[in-house]
Image (tube, rainbow, N blue to C red):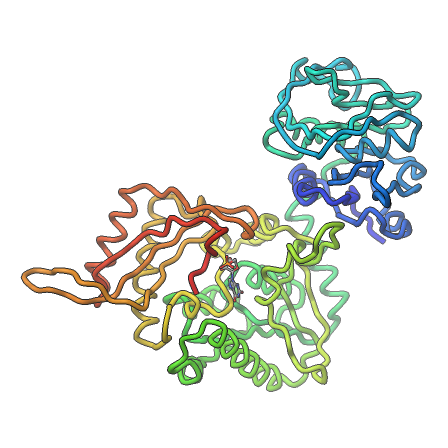
Length: 513
Ligand code: XMP
């Protein structure tokens, strides 16, 4: 049973459902996503301050269309239905919905007719919104008023102040609805009566208490990867149970340059954690010798990693718990496809033998990535660590095409370090979601001084993306690219050419493999 102010978001399959949750949490109110057909007892257990119904691809007239759980109208808490959610409310409460053709999205303008009603109070009379066009409400249920109408007469917002039930045909959660945050704010604070208790500090306090009660006087092991999620989990668990936590860092030899030293400096020296550093690079390079197939490389690295981690974990033979950096997008039970959220599952340390019987400690389970970062900052982790781009589990092996050797890793590390240094220096690091160098398996001709060279080609890749499922290449300034290329060719031995990758995903992927 939660004591935290909670907004429940029922997911009807909209591509924007996670965005609704993020927008609510940005206003310091905790929001949890549940499937539309969830057991009503789970909604009741959260004692929500309000319920939001997401949009969705269906028509209320579709056979087997997702329906409205009775608890939504019976709980007596405020409700906001967005798009499909508004149509469901209208249909259920006795209004009329007209059938449209396929659902599509687009910009629209709406006129507010009832600026005196809580949801739209004090907003400009004329709003730009992101509208979804499909079915539409034509007659409001009894007790409801029309709050806003679009240029072509479509009911854009409706509401019943007495029952505190509202609907918008447009999407307040997207950036294309500039006043969307204000509308959500009115719903959360003026209508639901939230106080705004969801802050990084409040989260840390609660998480520390929860970890203490879960772990008791048991011991916890945790694999540090150098990334932000495991760093934040380690810091939280350490804050909660101190020396009962032992972190393990497996240096595969495939990390970015100086990563192992940085991990030691941050977690052992600055934060005083028990940290076991394992230099396993020799066995990784031996296992990778002669291997060029990308899938084979991944398989070998995964297998070696588990063996090394397991051996260390067994050495700490009294461990009862395993800390993990699982985050909310990995655990959301979505009405749409759960497969969309699996990108980083392979990142976690899985596959520990069952007989070790470790219980998971996953304090970030309910956080979005941006919240993990805020929590990291609130606990004083260094900015460069908190804003670090995601780094694949198999490390630089997926960025070296062809055979992975110690020498080739050193070449790539040197080029990669220059690229990242210059990006930080230019202030543009945080504008990319990922940026890195790739070492190609070809040599090209060049000229240096009087001599002809025949040396390696390095590709630079920088992308912007929200979710890593699709991505665009980052429009980095030419001057920056020029400086990076110059430095790489001058400072990294055996590289004479640098290219920039201008492919989007799809059809390309982010990594080259
Ligand atoms: P792609 O290359 O598929 O990458 O567009 C999408 C995201 O996943 C990361 N990635 C991996 N992460 N193990 C990981 O932990 C892997 O084997 C792996 N392959 C790709 C990639 O860096 C990007 O963030």
